Length: 199
Image (spheres, rainbow, N blue to C red):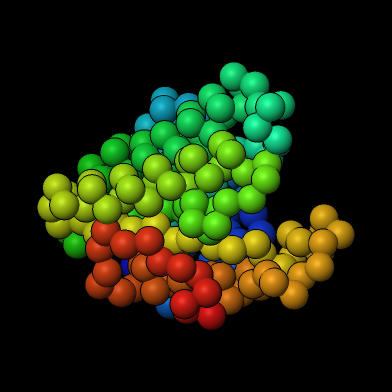
């Protein structure tokens, strides 16, 4: 398969690329660097990326920006970033990308465990993650010839270590990547795949 991976340079993205590269051709898309550049917060940038890449078999997104902050400190810009980038950025990958998918193609986006298990400071991230899961479930009912799923990672051990956090409750990027591989190569549709289920 020819797979377009958005966020390929990130911690999870690198692990997903490595896992898929064994049997498939992976095109890495990043904000800067990689095979092609894209800003998922900019619809025109997404369109330009697909025009450059052409026909593909699968789209995988491990991208999406949103800020951690206490509720009383969240600004309009914080809400806008989560809505425009993490939420609509990934929704637009499906909306625009479906025209570039070969028959029986798939789209896999990233939500996150904070939709089900919020914590203090996760307001806008939990909002975006929950909306993504709901959208996937609803949109899959209307998409023909395309499978559409989300992967819900928990905290990644590598990121936790960089932040000086205890990594015991996290999941490695390599184990997290297994859920993305399952979404791309499996038959599920309209589902949010908990990364822990596939580790």
